[in-house]
Image (cartoon, rainbow, N blue to C red; front, top):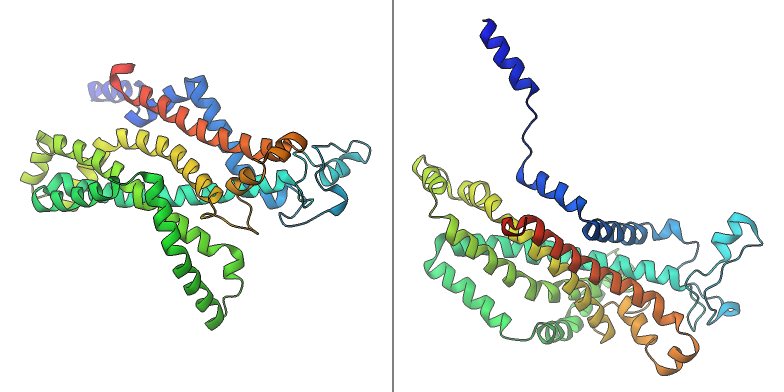
Length: 334
């Protein structure tokens, strides 16, 4: 009895072993660049999500007395006047506050890229990658050939074709829905733009994730723990999502993280080309297009500076975070 009590006490004194991803997250936080990227993305995304409360201006509000005004801070009207009268990033050629519009532009980019990555890169890519690698044969051939057809086109070219083709049809459907139901203001809310861009981004984001996961599954499905799960009667969904997916998720985390940076850039380019978020909704791509003229660069450079810095920070932070995750999750680089 005394021996059992001593062994139990010794077990309690032993520190609990941390999981692989807990240890990896701890190592990630110790990387200064990775920590800085995470803080930057959190500040940008939380700030954009709270845009209604952070800025006193509406993104469509025009002040004709402050047209093309340089960044300014009002310091002679107290704390309230400092936040309600200042234009931290200046105003555009219609007198709209650029800081407000940049926050809303980041919010649109955040929603579109996260939704597209969650549906395309994760849900569709992970599911098809698991099925392709596990079953092989005709299932593998059908999934991989479909992905190779889509990847045979340049990504941005395929996205432009899809966006330009689908936009008129989806806009017509949304207008019909608005006319025949109680859902008013759908067109003005930008629902059409969200649907078009989401479909366009999903169209090329799933194949890379599926191909990577397929390669992992092809290696893992011949291991002893998978054979043991089959031998004791484990169901196919259990083997796929309980045994295979957790062991293959490391490279997927890196791919998804670095893919977010490319998706942010693609969404901005689509808006820049007139196929993404359109007025009156703010878009970083449209603001970059409007601020890219020679006359603007000479006379009002702040119109390009604010959206340009926001877009650059998002793309750079996601890419650097992906590099840091690769170093953390790759055992050869520890």
